[in-house]
Length: 427
Ligand SMILES: [Zn+2]
Image (tube, rainbow, N blue to C red):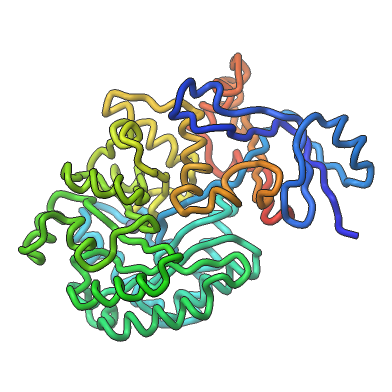
């Protein structure tokens, strides 16, 4: 007989998007959630669930918040050890810090060490699923999937392909990128909770031949996600223009090689042309907002309000280690601040939704993760809404759940995450 657990607390789940209509009415609170065999079985009144499931073990977290684990749809786990490196903009930052670190992943031992460290750190911050770039080394993909599989985590990752404008030792070719990606996809995609993403880093580091090979691989596996970067900095866009003089715009450098589609996941997307916005919406591609990265590297202000209004599919991500934090709470705070700079403050319900349901939607996984509902996978976190004296004194005056949550969004970190459950088991 399998073990049932009744987790009691303030259980928060979303009924609809808080970007449609009144955000305060987008979510519900219930008293308990029943978990069995890694899935959510039921939620509702604690007494009712206790009565109907007297065999369930009980875990009562009092007035702490129980919600879905955070979903981080754009990260670079290999950049864990160089997060918060000082003083560069995108292209210099890649050359000075990122590429030297990524070289080290030719060593499977180092790759395994960083994969474990990354998953430890992110679990402590309440993130249960992420979509990660690896390095050009197949070993870096094996290390990440091996570590995530051991923990029972739902993750997405792919070999980062680059065949130009990167140092010796960090370049593959169009053919080896295709062959190695295809072999890794075959080996890992659909194993337990693992998914493979076809991963060209971005147009400046791939030749047209390599982009074409990636597009061909995606056409053979259209159910897989394809992740890359798009329109992060203005000098990057100029560089793309000089490398692809025929292209109509940055997005066209992907589109013409078959790298634009519904399962495409595009990081940053800040400085978009009207044609790019229209095409991304037409195909219903995923746009990933990485606010701590955008302020840290000085990239620009994502147009959350306009893109949401136009109906884009949007996720929220840390972009570790271009982003300056592993915390999705800190990332929500940065999204709030960027919204303020654009004249539109995001409601706490919108911030929490973006970091869970919205990000799961961006990975086309919102049917199984990112929310609490019967049948969904039980990746849950318990959040202490008074985790520091500064937060607790503010929360004490809160008159509703959103006022109680907002100080933790703005000032919280891993101390706010009391428990993390992956596939129904506390970790
Ligand atoms: Zn990135």
